[in-house]
Length: 212
Image (cartoon, rainbow, N blue to C red):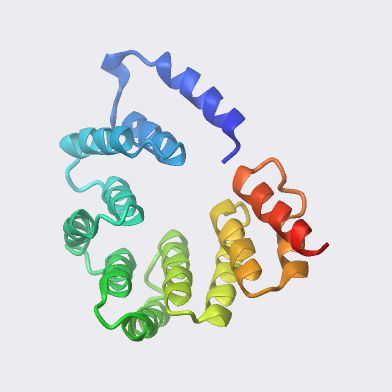
């Protein structure tokens, strides 16, 4: 995320009076805090949103994601159980992600989680939103990386970018993966024109250095 836009967002949110701070406000501010890696503040806002709307799907997803990226799998599991109240792709994704990350058998368990989630996605293409499908594809990409299935991971990150052209997270993860695979030319190509995005600028600089 471009930090200039986050600064603008912070100033706009400061102008919102307490009586006007509704669920949408808390979700938006939590998203901003998450982008800044201010996870405690984001979690506080998400809980405020859930206090008003206990079944709010976006808040539940963000709770899971924040716990997961911090490696707090106990809290992530609790958030996933809330999501699992609806047997949809979001629920299948969080269950597979936890299985891949906390599996005792390492890459073998991650590979099995990837296969099962991919099968779930294929069976639900007609009944799920594009947003849910995109979330699942991104989850598949991350699981594939954990399983060192790099070709599958690259295919999934590319698919995520195709489904959502402005997905900078997928673009950065793809760039980083291409560095891991030694595909410097592709890393330079995917990061070209995105030098103002910190993560992609770092990936590009690394690729430029590697290219000599």
